[in-house]
Length: 352
Image 1 (tube, helix red, strand yellow):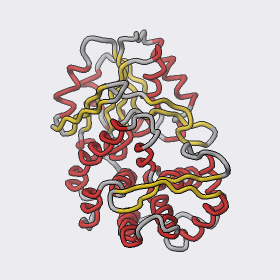
Image 2: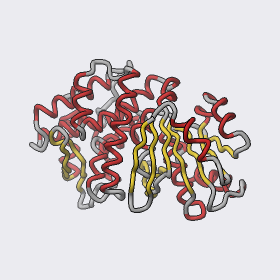
Image 3: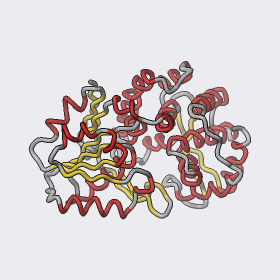
Image 4: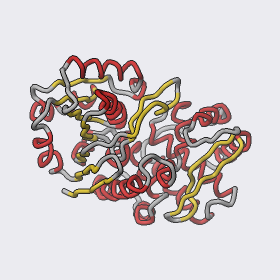
């Protein structure tokens, strides 16, 4: 079991990675206060023995699985359940699930009595390598992802790779989308993905979880509220979110397409080194090929691009701002007028 410390101005949190993380840490975290568990229908059905062993007698809220349930209505129901359970300011919320549960659970913990302790137990690859770490919490509103939320750090994150054994192949691919993001920012992870022929090999993925977490922890420690360096973690996400919302692809799949298109755009604008950018695109192609599925219809990419106008990195003036890969281990920002952004995406689609 590996311990990673994430120290920010608001919290000194700990992240434990390994198959002993839950067994070694969870019993102690349950002691001394009233607890509340948030999970979803998929995880609750898959792991009845886990919930029986650790959370017997604890109030458990089971949310219907799916991004479409990460909304204000669900948040209100969770908060009402927390209140009825008699939680106090000293209570603790355990978010057991993927990115949706981590996001909405973290926000519920941040809001209830102006903040109670939160423990993240991520069960998907995407949540383990990325979303459970760093304290971003949110719900979706008006068709825009994560537009209402707060920065609220969990006290601990318990990452057990054994949960990945029950993930569908497409969920593994979704998590690999975030791993490819880290490859664009971290030379060691980039080299590992370049050399690996089969990106979804279980032992290989397990070896990358800690590396991704350590990279993110270092970035968050330097910039908790995303005013500078933390924007690097949005590589591929401006376009990726737009594609996700328009096509119904998973978050990770959207990020993969977004990474390809934004890298292509950065190369065309002379921002990204061509040889490096092409290698990054090769990694993206390997990831996209993991599950047999038809490529989305991007004939309406101009309409899809409209979703990018709501991206939180934009500063107005009809500009779309992207965090893009520049060179191995180096990133930068690229802003384009919306019309030129649309043209760049249309050009990139032709290169897919």
